[in-house]
Image 1 (cartoon, rainbow, N blue to C red):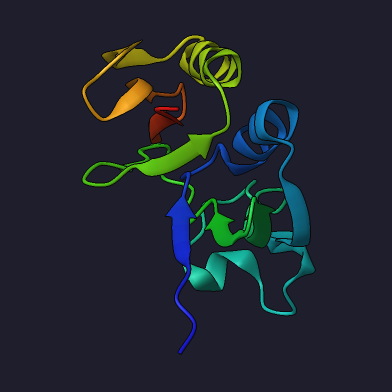
Image 2: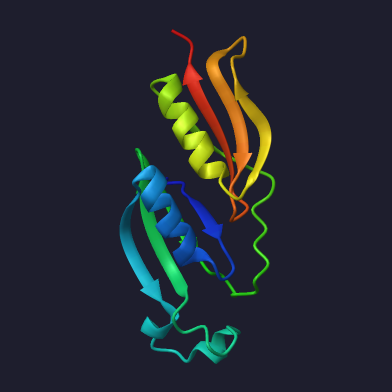
Length: 138
């Protein structure tokens, strides 16, 4: 069995992928747009004008494979109820990722020293994805 997370950005998938490529150096493995489908977009319930939106993609982040899409292009992404946890090697890397992912987002828990980590913090990025940044105690 292979389990992967599938993220629905509801119209902002390409922007999210570009953002994550710049910050996290994700590797795009596969990318298909609605225009690539042999079926007309409207027959799938996708709003007219969404042909350039992402129908499906897969990307690697570290050792993990994620999938993502613009879903139904509703403009209402709901990425609540879970977070992606990033374990990094040092405090400087944790701070850099925390600051970059939080740019135009929301700090859920400031990045700080805890009893279990040299640094730990939680941030929701501008696309609504929650991230947990963890730099292990040495």
